[in-house]
Length: 263
Length: 246
Image 1: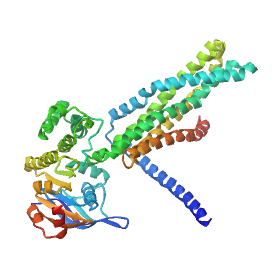
Image 2 (image 1 turned 45 degrees about the vertical axis):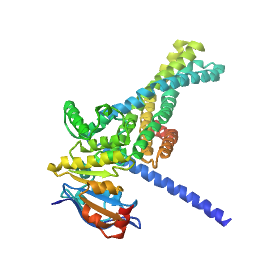
Image 3 (image 1 turned 135 degrees about the vertical axis):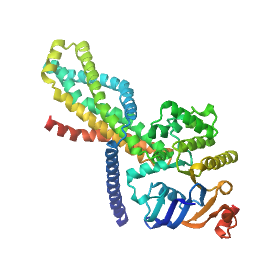
Image 4 (image 1 turned 180 degrees about the vertical axis):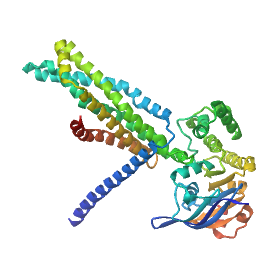
């Protein structure tokens, strides 16, 4: 009984120590990225390559998810409020939800899954094949060469993807609400302009930039932390996706609380 | 002849474990020096100290006349451009072709025009005897020996003053081993006018005896033997005799 209790307490202690150690390493990594982000040279081509990969290459999946998210949300809203004859507010409710929550969070989840994993896999496989050492020996900081373009690229690309998500999501909502369910089009747009404000859009865009930053950091960090061979790369990739998604969802609450106070 | 690198009472400890134990030696400039030793002898740690990738617990390292302890992180990065390194498995960037790998340091650190880079890369590729058909292949499409040659060409691109070779013949067949060893020797000979210093870390006794001017044998972080090739062959130290007989 005593042994079981001892093992249990030791297990809790080890988990806490592991968490603190991980946070310490992540903070150190973030410090390195900040430091090297402001050191010359600025590698614009690498940044553009990352923005192309994170932004442009995610467009199809963002377009598809946003169209159907807007459409299904409009359908559910319509079914819920039709009974009280408020179907004209489907447009603004969907639009505000998209701007403030759905677009940044869904785009964040898509990018965490698609790009966070790729970042960890690319950097991790470079680490296990000594390519990071080769950069260091040449006098090139691996954080500056690999992590900085990914973090900055994700931070800049996410608001663009989020904006596109909002636009296409609203298109889906209009298609289902007006064209399929027969909500009056004039009322739909009238209510939309009555309730929707620029601060709703701004909140979503700022939040998505924060998500992009976190996804870039987490994806790159798990790449740099890879140990061993192919198995280590797989583990790092997996951790990047899991932590990327969890961080988007958890940080969403805190960022939202903060932004609602200042916007 | 002056030493390119000198270690003075260098100690490196990781916790309670002493990996380098009071090392004092010099690596002569313009010569090929090989560091031999069993696994865990401290060879890789020694290489990391030479590159400034890790700092000694105590002692002093002077490289090309510069006290390494006086260099900060940015200074060390600048200083590392004096070194060219060939990695055990070549460490070529897998997203770049062989040609682009060799062009990489030139693009990063020089202001050469694209035509000049092309000319320089072609001459390096020819110097390491790579056939033009392989120049635009990705590293994954090259054999182990070819990858090592591309790695050597990349390391030579910025005309380093010290070349480091980490297990250059490991994983190669006997013919490729001979080709790579000969390339190390010929690279040193071709760059004799600018006194290129070569430091090879190896397990391969036969290749080391063939190409080296000096051989150091490390055992548990200490120097067991450091002499010319002849001196090494004639050493009566039982550890060296055992290693030579393997």
